[in-house]
Image 1 (cartoon, rainbow, N blue to C red):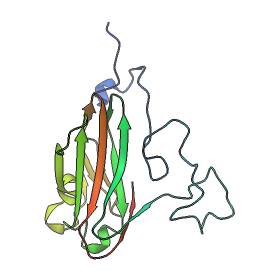
Image 2 (image 1 turned 60 degrees about the vertical axis):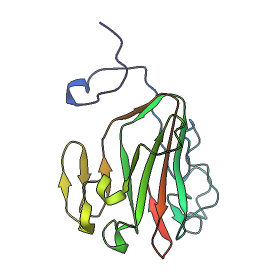
Image 3 (image 1 turned 180 degrees about the vertical axis):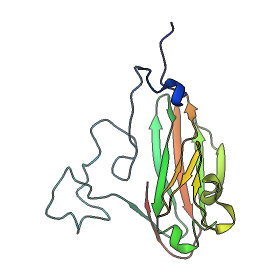
Amino acid sequence: MSEFNGLGMGLGNLARVSRAKTRSICAENFTGEKGKAGMATEGTGARCARDLGQGWKVSPSVRIKAGETFTLAHITGSGAIQHVWITGDLSLKGPLARFFILRFYWDGQEQPSVECPIADFFASPWGQYAQINSLPVAVNPNRAYNCFWEMPFRKECRVTLENRHNDDITCYY
């Protein structure tokens, strides 16, 4: 039997073991570097976490200014994105308003392979909140947007979010 590569994580592969390495990309670790989450000492939650110290979620979110394009993730080496989760005051501008443009760039490309309003990416177009419960997409009652599209890349992945709204936003992902 050939070695399982960790992709295709449907229910049929749930019990299979692979040598794939998992990483979490977050507001405290944009590259997914091992052991680098929970290292922030400044950030959006610094005041709330002031007595907790390093190792706690001091920066669980990012602030994206009006008109700014922010790099949510930059991963080097081969891999696959298997889960994207995002929430924040994106929802307060009209449920995941069409002002926020999500882009995925693969393997050093200058033009994005995915470019769409973030609401569309999570199957929630037209700015209307609707709960969704499916295998590839879940939109939960408190506006936690999840997708499980498997997106492999060979050399590099970069994910950006552009804020075309007039106000700054806070984004958890």
